[in-house]
Length: 169
Image 1: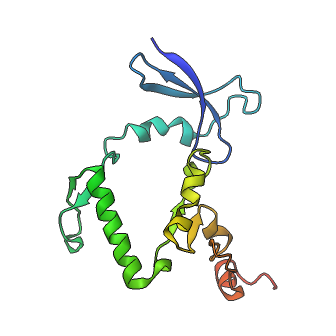
Image 2: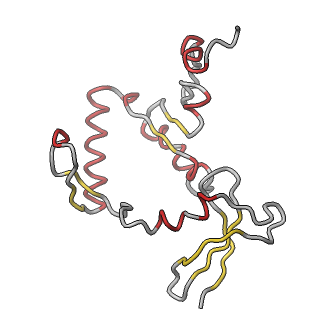
Image 3: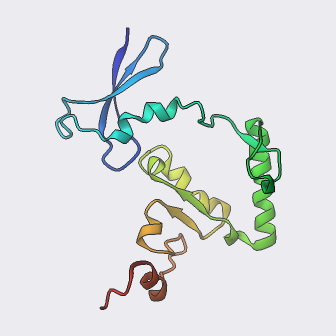
């Protein structure tokens, strides 16, 4: 027996309405469009409808992994580590980069799933401020300008021209 739970896709801007069929163990068994939704009238794109395949993919990384062989060997070998060890290692590496190259050697990036999550966007967007860097990027900054950072730097005309062509022609 499954229960229908009304939800929405969090991959991109339209936030398509979905119905998740949840089994007795609390696992989602199927995602389908909400055909009675007054706005979408049952539309949902293939990304959202197939997301259960991504969630259940056997190659999905669900735990921190540490590389155990040199990058020069090509194919990586990894071991599972605890979240505590992973965060401690990342913290050491980031402090080392900041110490050697300055705070603006660090930058943050977040994409669409976080941008449309009301519980995540504020803490994630404030991360560059908390670590002291002027460089924080989101899903749109690469396509809208090359220097959209928290320092309010303006993109140069030369860089914009190289990206999109000379618009004065």
